[in-house]
Image 1: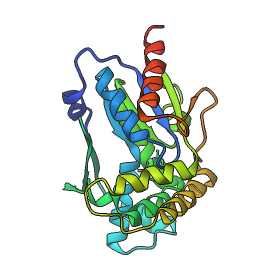
Image 2: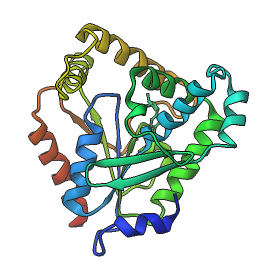
Image 3: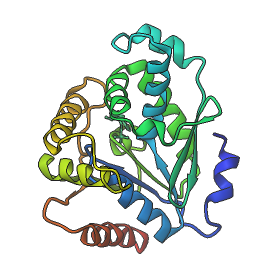
Image 4: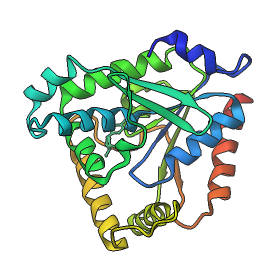
Length: 239
Ligand code: DC
């Protein structure tokens, strides 16, 4: 995505701030990021969607996702674009819209696997730094406050107990009418496995930046989390 694409959507008078939101799967990062973006006129960039899009391509291609070299070769011929919108990002993989396809549980798992490789991370981080360079963004992921934008104006680390995150994910799965095809225990188990990998990889493991504000939503409602996150941004903007 070019910086020009981005400037179309960023509100004219939006602050140039970078808001980094990191945390484990199912902590509510996307919802909070979207709400902050709407409230402050910022672009909302979901970096997990980029890893997911690449993982989808690797799965479709049938290459091994447990070795770096084939993935690096694939990355050299892959274009990933994020188009920010009010309801989230549209994701384009080599020009094809994959916004829905990347939400498949198999892709979630593969995204976590391909993201352990330093060469893949370096490529993604470069793209993300380009996307956020002009500021006026809420960027969410695992390493935004630690690696992608270590000097971000606001850093929030959003967390919640694994059971709570798993149940929220499970409830979301039933929101489109059809009952979820899996049991809640399976969702919690998959989420724990992904957390484990994301937290323990050698390159850029998921962890709060030393200067991140920790926001634990285990015992909070969505509105309470949104309120606290907004207060954090407001207090930074008023400095
Ligand atoms: O946020 P998500 O669930 O869509 O992310 C999918 C996977 O991508 C996640 O398990 C780890 C990886 N990821 C990452 O390593 N770094 C990021 N900044 C975002 C996601």
